[in-house]
Image (cartoon, rainbow, N blue to C red; front, side, top):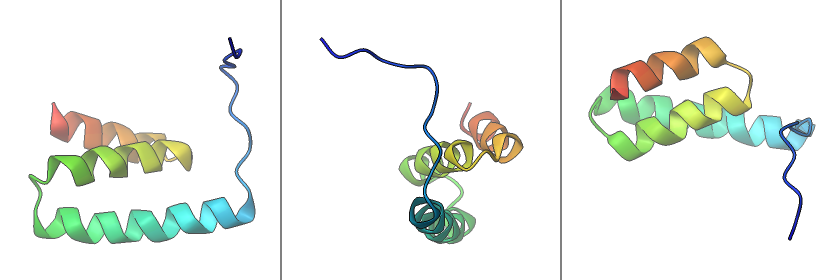
Length: 64
C-alpha cells in the first residue's frame, strides 16, 4: 500500500502557470454564475494549491 505524505511537493513553474490560467477561467465562470457549485469547489481547491488560503477560505464560506 502506498504511503501518503502530508507534505506537499512544490509546484513546478508550468503547474503554477496552468493553475493561474484555470483560476482566471473559474473566476470568470463564478462571477457570471455565483451558484455554480462545481466551479466554486474547483476554484477553492486551486486557490489552496497556489497558497491563496484566504481566497480559498472565502470560497469555502460562500459554499457553506
